[in-house]
Image 1 (cartoon, rainbow, N blue to C red):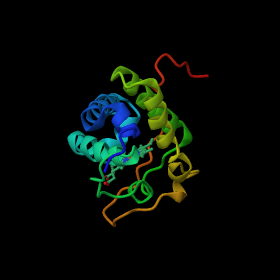
Image 2 (tube, rainbow, N blue to C red; image 1 turned 60 degrees about the vertical axis):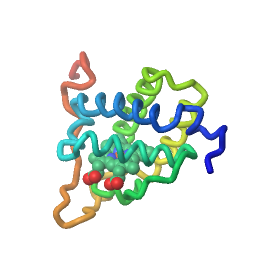
Image 3 (spheres, protein in one colour; image 1 turned 30 degrees about the vertical axis):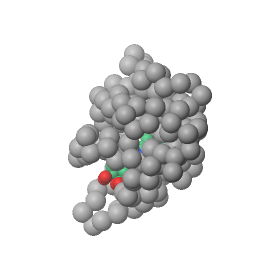
Image 4 (cartoon, rainbow, N blue to C red; image 1 turned 90 degrees about the horizontal axis):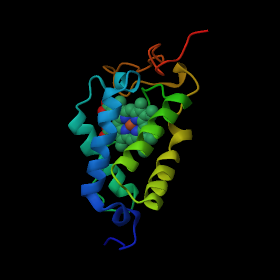
Length: 151
Ligand code: HEM
């Protein structure tokens, strides 16, 4: 049973979580650096996995049966900077979707709680999940941030 005051209810349930994921992944797929990690991943699929995962994380229905975050990202070189960037896009998406501030702050906190388990100090910490996996390790492109001058 759902608690009426769960964060899941405060954000507006599955419909609002799905809206946030759409806005968020549109930004990720349009971003010159973050998009590289998703080149082989179907956007609709990841949005729907994330909707289920976040619903559960925020106290909503337990409908997520996918991989847990640590095993799902073991082949991905997530740097602190990349994690910051993702958090920034998530915060913007929550604002654009009109999620109430207090609930958005809790969502961001729950997301942030994964940082230490997902950020890797070097490529050597990455491991393939399957033999067919590629290690995903992309440097920050020179075209980002816009307007940044070399030197
Ligand atoms: C910069 C940070 C991150 C990057 C670059 C990233 C990238 C990715 C990619 C590429 C996938 C698809 C993996 C595949 O199916 O082959 C994925 C899946 C997923 N990510 Fe992330 N992610 C990041 C942070 C996070 C965080 C903070 C969370 C949790 C709050 C998260 C939760 C998930 C979940 C639940 C899946 C689906 C797992 C599955 O069922 O396979 N990710 N991520």
